[in-house]
Image (tube, rainbow, N blue to C red; front, side, top):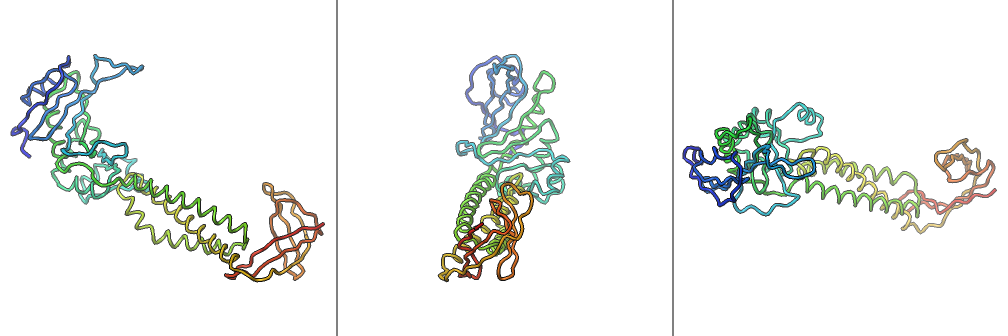
Amino acid sequence: MRTRGQWRVTSEKAKRGRWTQLNDVAEALGVTYRGGEALDVRIDGQRARLQLIISFDGDGVRRFDRVEGLELLVFFEGAPPPRSDDANILLRVEDGADRAAKKRGVAVEVQLGSPGFDREVYIDNTSSEADVRRILAKEATRQAVRRLLAGHVHAIRITPQYARVKLEPRGEVFEARPILEALEDLLIVARAGGPKDPAPAQRGLTLLTGLGVSTALAGLYAWYSANEWPAGLGPLFIGGACGALVAFFSRPALESAMRGGSGSGRRVGFSLLLLWAAVGLAVTGALTHLNGALDDSKATKRTGVVASVAEGSVGERVQVRIRWKDGEDERLWTPFAPRKGDRVTEYSHPGALGFDWREGRTWER
């Protein structure tokens, strides 16, 4: 790209208006300005726009006597129409809060291996890491970003359609020199185009939704199995261990899928928790189901008496101690309060997978 003194600039057809803020800029560019809210130009074939930011009063009515700022936009040729879920990259000055968030693992930022840039610029993006590295691959681009942020630019936004910055006027007049300097740097930043890959934030949301639905379905299956063939805590412990193993080995894939977006650390953590729950509940339900459904043994009857009833309750459940005739004592929670001395009869099976499961329990006074 040629330097500013070598630019070939042409202006686009624009409506006439009453604004004068861009007169000096248009004169410096050598184009005609009709006083409209925007000045559209082509610089060496690249379409750019200088758009005045007009203020509004409290009722949302436009006030034609105040200009609050200026937007500089460089458009990408052949860009797709804008969508609400478009990936974008926001470059801003890195502050103490950003560093603290990265240290706690709340935010995961792409690091480019350029110490000065990585230290000064925070990349808050919903695009892929590959997009970020492609757009900021050249040292000239990174230097242009640092110059923009060192001036009167708070942030640089790069979308699939354009690269944009906002400038504030110095006093009542827009001086041509700082505007053209910022435009020159923005053209450098826009050389590599905008994000093209699907946004990690969108992929993360889709993945989290799928894991949430899977967890809910697995929970319903485990609840159904536990009510049909109640087999104690054995299947639950095995399911939890299986879920933990799957989550552990799946972590690199989840981090890769969500890398590049701000807050990706939280999304990965929540995804791992949902994956552990989904797999654990699914395995628990399957073990309980197979243990009972495949068991064709005859039920074994066991009898005992209520030895004691604890005072108080947790919610609507009461703790009861049963003394079985085989000498075993068992404490369990019941949704009602039996009396000491009540007879208890229980029918149980050995289980096809080795987990004893109860067919039913009766209480008699």
